[in-house]
Length: 217
Ligand code: E4P
Image 1 (cartoon, helix red, strand yellow):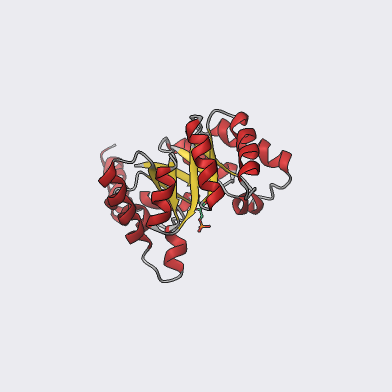
Image 2 (image 1 turned 45 degrees about the vertical axis):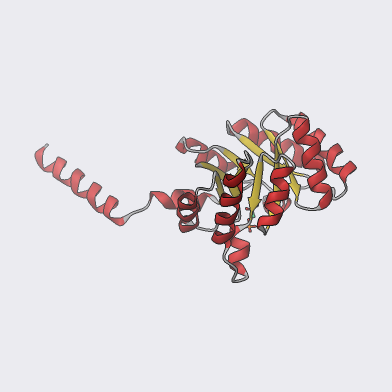
């Protein structure tokens, strides 16, 4: 299972990268705005900074909602750095743009996926990643995990190579549940990754080992 971090915060990205378990980064316009990164030039520069911190795929989202705009923006994003993955919204023009980029061998991440049918369309358009938003479905009392399971079954039925990127992960249990279902990737905040480290018995056990070592030395 690949671990992506879902943030535009360079310190959080560097901390996850330093753990040695980070496979990539996802961003979106809201995450950029949260870090105060505004204006086209600053946003593009920020993507490059992220690519310089991590080794893996970095999703950069287009703002256009029409095919021509998405292609123009996506090509400029792809030219920024070889690690850039074009993030496209799941609308008709996004699917068309996904097919365009996948035919050119450019990686894509189709985002804002809330149904199995949408995921199937993205897979048929050759998406590298499809991003079902788990947490946002949970927020409206809908079973987000069931959506991940449905997509897993459909992709396995037909051997689609599109990777399921479980997005809108909010906490460690989402990560574990997605791993059990067989999601290819998860993307979440730093806390959803570092939270996996924590267990009180680990802390108690380590304190005891260190105390016992001191007794004998
Ligand atoms: C996915 O790539 C999105 O950036 C993200 O996971 C959305 O998460 P949120 O619902 O916590 O905003």
